[in-house]
Length: 254
Image (cartoon, rainbow, N blue to C red):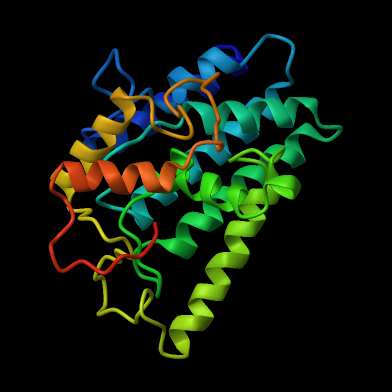
């Protein structure tokens, strides 16, 4: 068995285990109901020229990252990982130290899940805002001249997320504010004015995807990455139209 085949087989075992424990692994792709697994994505990305050590290291990182999502966000509904994995693979291949680059990128992404998810003071419910670029688009629009060339899965944005997470944890340790308050253990955080209960979350993001109002088409290895539209506002407006904003909701601008 070749090293490539062995690596893909290991990824398929991971995919099967993840689907069994956290399925169905849904997608926002318009032409299918299930997200591509890591094996399917990596099979499309891996060529014949790259070193087996790089493929093995990348597979290790991809598995660790997806397992971190499952652990940190056990109720995660949407699992499109095509675009982020494609970005990290291509950046690793182009780097002078491909194996180290892959380990660093996927290590950064893995750490973020553990920082923002269940069991932390932040306790967000889903990885969706990271995977589909809502966090990134909002970040870029705050300083477009400086950030407009930075992608949603680039190291600079991953680091900015880490810094933002640290800032929020410090804020919560000091008692929080109107938008971010300390929570009971394992209570999911929702700093938005609209409902993010599972059925509402799916309805909202499927409607946005159908109208192509998603910053990152994460379901495709060559998916679009756009920040130039007011995606936070458009999502809030669509939530309002779907009846997902309670009458007594506090406007929060996100």
